[in-house]
Length: 137
Image (cartoon, rainbow, N blue to C red; front, side, top):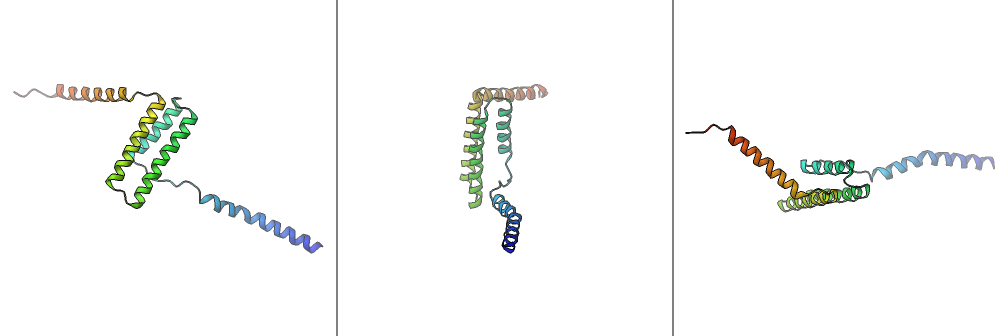
């Protein structure tokens, strides 16, 4: 009887010491993998986080948008694995553009106002450049 009790305790102790290592191996296979992101992807992700920080979108919208953004990145990785073509780059670019428009809409940002201000800034820069040039006669 004593031998069975000692054997049972020994097996239990052994199982308890080995179980965490099995759990760690199971978890590590499902961990996210870091990847390189383009400047546009970094900018859009920062914009997403900033919109949330500034209260322009709520936590549910953030989670949904992050899921959609991650989906675009996964699609890009899939294209890269098969060999990223010009059509693939174009598809990813369009998806990012649509995502950013969706983000702007959710945040209440008027993309037309942004476009107008960008055009105005460029026009101001061009005018400043013309004023600084000396007349040639």
